[in-house]
Image 1 (tube, rainbow, N blue to C red):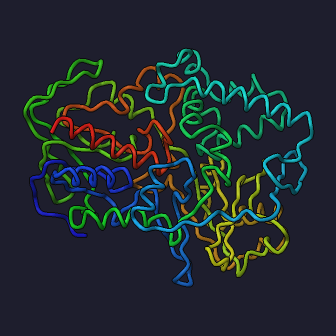
Image 2: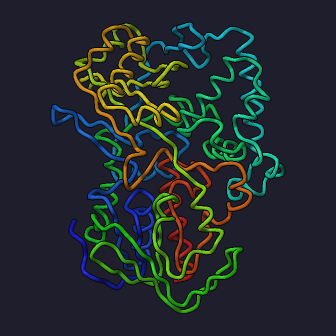
Image 3: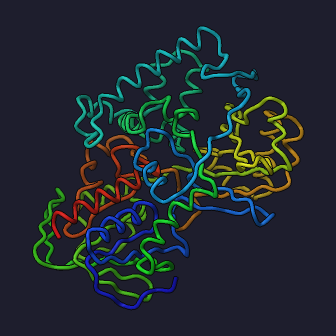
Length: 468
C-alpha cells in the first residue's frame, strides 16, 4: 500500500508482523482508531511465503510451525478460517553423530545406554531448573544471579558427561534459538525452555512445537489479520523517529512520567500523531529508532545487548519426496553440518518433494559470507551424506539468510547474554511514557514463536486500554 497522508489517530502501531497486527486488531475492536506503519512492502514480519519456480508451490521462508499447546495462535487459526496439516512423520528418522549413522523410530535415538542415560539425566535436570524461572520476571528466579552469570555452554560442560550428549545439547541451542550455547546466559536458556513447555515440547513434531503447518503457508495468518484492518495498515513506511510530548524521562534507572500529551511517529514521507504508540519490531531494530526525548538509559542499554540469532533457511526441491519411498521421514539430526537439522517440507499433496535444511549459529554466520553457489554445494553435500546421492541433484534451491534481511537482522528471535536479564530485564516490556512494546521476544509464554507474538500484541493493547 502507499504511504498514508499525515493523520491523527488514537494509537500508532510500528510493525506489521503478528504482534503489531494483533495489537492493532485488539485496539480497533475496542473502538480506538489505529494506523499500522510497516517498513517492508508486505505484512508478516518474520513469517513470509515464497513461491517455487513452478509459480504455484508455496514454501515458508520464515516461521512456519504451530504446536498444540500454542492456544492463542490455534484459536486465531480457527477464527480466521485457516487450515493446517501435520508435519510429515511417517517412517524412520536419521541420526548421524560421532561418525555413525542410524535410522530409528519414536523419540529415543539409538545412542547406546550410557549416552541415553547421560542425556536423560541432563534433560531432566535442565527442565527442572527451567520450571523454577518465573516467566513474567526471569530476573526474579531464586538463583537468577548465579544462572545469569553463566553461559549455557558452561552448564552443558559441567552437567553432561558424554561427548555425544554435549553435542546434542549444543544442537538443541542451535535448533531452538539459532545460536551457539556460548552466546546466551543459562538463565535465558532456562527461560526460553520454560516458556515453550520444556525441551521435548520445543524439539518434537508430534505433540510439539513442530507438529502442524499451514495450508497455503503461514503468511496467510498475517494477511487475514491485515484484511480485518484494511487500509489502516500501511506498508513501505520505515519509521525513523518517535517524539513524545508530556513525558519526563527519569534518571538512569529508567523511570518515566507521562502526563497529558501525545506521540508523533515519523516515517519516510509521513507523520502520524496519536495518544499512544505500540512498537512491535525486534528490540535491536527498536533501538535504532530516534526517540525524543531519548529512551531511559536502561531501555537503551537493553537494546544494545539483545541480538537476534543467525539462521539461513534452505528449501531443497526435488521432483518427488524420494526419501519417503525409502521409509524415511526426512527428519534428520547430524553433528557434521553445515545443516544439522532437516525436515520434510513438501506441500500437503506431497509434490514436489522439499527437504528443509537449517544453517544455524556459527554455520549460518560463516556460510552467510560465502558465494551462493559454494554455500549451496556445501548444503547439498551434507544432504548427500544423510539421504544418498539423489539428494545432491535437486531441481532448485530456495534460501533466505535472515541476518541479511534489513528489517529483521536475524532469527528466530532475540537472545540475552550473561548479565542482561538480571540487569536490564524489566525494560523489555516496561512502557516508556506513551510507548508500549510488543513482539515475540517480549512474550512470557511461547517467547519467540507466533503464539508469543500474538499474545504480546494483545498484552500491549490491553495496557493501553487501561490508560485510554
